Length: 337
Ligand SMILES: NC(=O)c1ccc[n+]([C@@H]2O[C@H](COP(=O)([O-])OP(=O)(O)OC[C@H]3O[C@@H](n4cnc5c(N)ncnc54)[C@H](O)[C@@H]3O)[C@@H](O)[C@H]2O)c1
Image 1 (tube, rainbow, N blue to C red):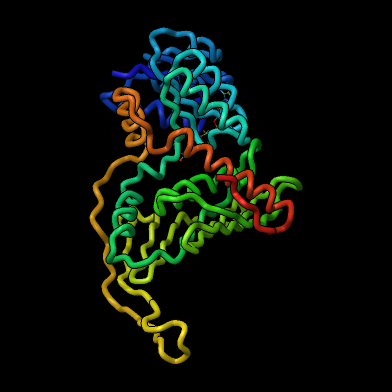
Image 2: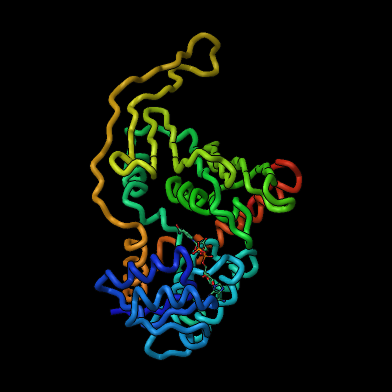
């Protein structure tokens, strides 16, 4: 049984507390939030958990093995650093930090203190996303041409980060997981419609090895709620619709590829493939619980998490490159490898 302290008991933190409570591998010992009203809500729902507004009460508690951090992005670095420095395994929400140097520092600190550092890229623990990964890595899927993600709705508007830092980490992490490689460059344009300085809309293009391209659209101002990821291959197309509980994954066995000598004008032809639409059965499981179970397994077996510090750093590097490209109205920016 891993004894957990949860820091940040807002919208997402309360889910961690519930999930850890329901899992047999974990027990929430203490929770921390600087907002007393949140602590009262938590105490009412989980009366056996000790609430505090002081991070130190968790960090210095020898009864606690691991810390989960679900505070706003700007505080991730400082709290994660304190937790690791005090010998706690740490699962921190995305993004790992708000700048590259801080992310690198946290990775080094985790290595030095021999503690597990994991980032909450929750979609990597989503059974539908895992199923898609299985499909698209089979030869029968053909070559991957491109990936496209749409993450739109009205809000939830955050004060610390913009819509891109808030929403795009999910898709950046998923694209790299699907492709098994990281983007080389990024080009992004954004719009500031609600506030003058923080984009609430973003259109992001990413370039991967082998000419694969990715595209992500995020928005806090679009009344149409969409949570969709599409992977288009030469033989098939697969669609993940996170809002469709019944058929979250659909595989369209249709595609287009060139056959013949592409250099010889008139000798090549477009091969169109038509086929079935398949909706695979996917075992129901809660991604957040899968993520916590993976965290526990990694710290018990001393193995590297799927969404480790390096994966968190990669996402932060991409977000930083997006920021640079936004400033230049879409000029492509290299992503340091
Ligand atoms: N992985 C996912 O699917 C997912 C979903 C939602 C949110 N998140 C992430 O979770 C994090 C929190 O998001 P949220 O929606 O719960 O935000 P929120 O604003 O609802 O909650 C954050 C809480 O942290 C508390 N807090 C802030 N600084 C603190 C500190 N120094 N010590 C203790 N408590 C502190 C605040 O008082 C607040 O209650 C963000 O990083 C967000 O990106 C991830």
